[in-house]
Length: 495
Ligand SMILES: [Ca+2]
Image 1 (cartoon, rainbow, N blue to C red):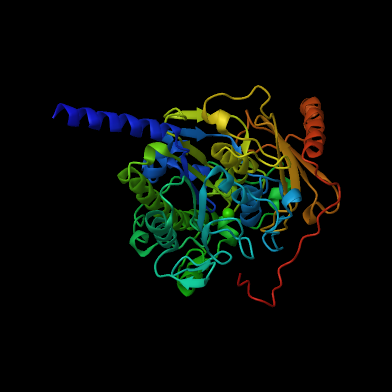
Image 2 (cartoon, rainbow, N blue to C red):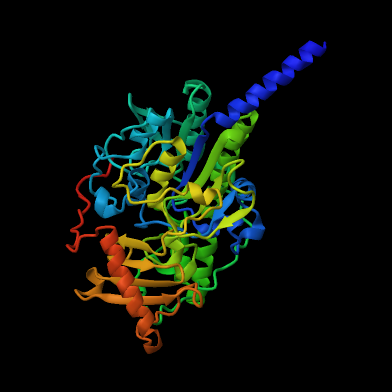
């Protein structure tokens, strides 16, 4: 009896030693257009509504990153930056239309050297066949919300159900049945939700029907001091499509719109509520599926040796400035959520405020896997930050560059130190001239006051212009303007 007990004790010790020396698994959870403000853990105006309990749980048990940003706030370029660890001008993916060069180096082509098996499920938005993953099942283009097809190495496979459920089901099938259980894994789960046109799974359609969502303070922004923002075409009132976006009966709504008693403000408010109902019904679907994946790790007893990271391809406007969509270098779209739970490494409930960017993710994955990152990747490993040890020479500013002309957002680039932001608009709407904006983020976090013409700010602006030149040099941004590939409207974008 005693001998039996000792044996159990010894095997327990061996197991504990094994777990310690074993490389950690990585579960990467990635959304499309998930606003920082949508996540309760970030303490937004929706936080008390408790709509993201599984994602919030990750922040409670791990580290919340408050200053993680993207380099180009639109779907495909963000994914290219994620895989290559490079800004758009280095990976060649400037917008959503031109082809991505899959032959270039990407982290997943190297992570196997560290003994990892890799798999990706869901949205990549990078036309052409993805390379380097041991297993992949990806949505063609944007993919469909309901009954999506997935591209695989063997061809296209049709699935039934909502995309968030299908993507999770496929990931779980690989996890349970196809992976090599003796190797660590890098599992990437890329949801389409909550991208426009915000179609939830049927079980969530009615979830928020009686909910009144709090409005942002800037819902009725008049864009005073911001010439470029005036020209937007992502206004909830003016540009949100009634039929496709808000799924209303268009004829009934037309009658409604013709009602002269309805003020512009009231129309904005009603459309905002309808938008939030669908957006959060999609978020609820993601959160539930995040819970399913976390439960599985726990049930298998490997949650202690699995790093879970949650992020999005960029932020989104949930009515701030009267908008939906992304693209701008303003905080709501420039910033993205990032939460990391690494048991034994990230301190539970901790918050990091260092400047991080989506070009850092590739090098972070490689660092975890013990694989050296190629010297031309442009990010930094975030592993020291997970350990609570910010390197002394950590970056002091971030570079951003948007190359498209979409939703009334003209081409622009800029630099942010977290406290100050300088933006240079130079695209069509700037009419051939450089048009600058400058924000004091500490005193004006909502970016309502462009202070570029304020003489009191002159020396700070000069300093930020020097920073702008220096960061462009550092990342080797060419001076030549990029001519964007236009979408061929004669063909349907099938892939
Ligand atoms: Ca997106």
